[in-house]
Image (tube, rainbow, N blue to C red; front, side, top):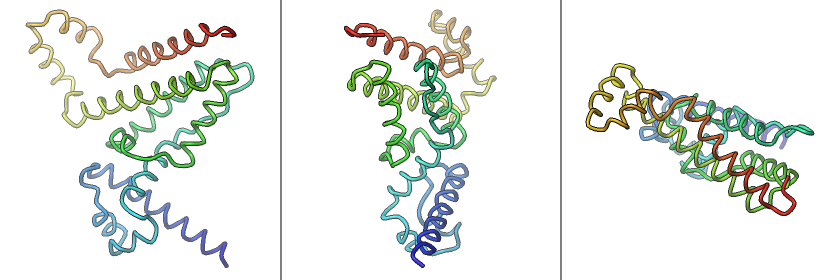
Length: 219
């Protein structure tokens, strides 16, 4: 009987999270309230507290659910740790961009079990590659900060409408007093592109590689 009850509760939590993510896409993070969510689910707002202690716990689980859309696969024997990490970062960017306001959502949440397991797997893999624990953790933190900040700017551009080609051309015209800024913006099509993401990602991974090779037993 207990097994059936727990299974039912888990399914209800999953339904709440999926509905909350759908509302996030529709109304954005600022307008996502427990009252609105309860109305969408056809229940009274206090009913949600049977499943989540508070709104923050719900937001935590929403961020976790979005993150695991692109799960980390194990590092294969002999595989390049750089390409493995790059693949994971690209997947996380796709997951973040598949929903609205996800960078802001993730920035304010606490890591759950899936996130902590991902961190543990990455650290264990980097330790096997020869990193110290500190370099591995700080390198991962730098990647996560870059990823979150980059997607935040991408999503902000979408909200402001500045990702529209016509508006971009207008913005270029306004940069006439700053010829170098205007030239590089025209050349790169803006700071948030696939190419600029790959460039930033490569810079961080190169820095991690340099730290690794600077160690006495660097590989």
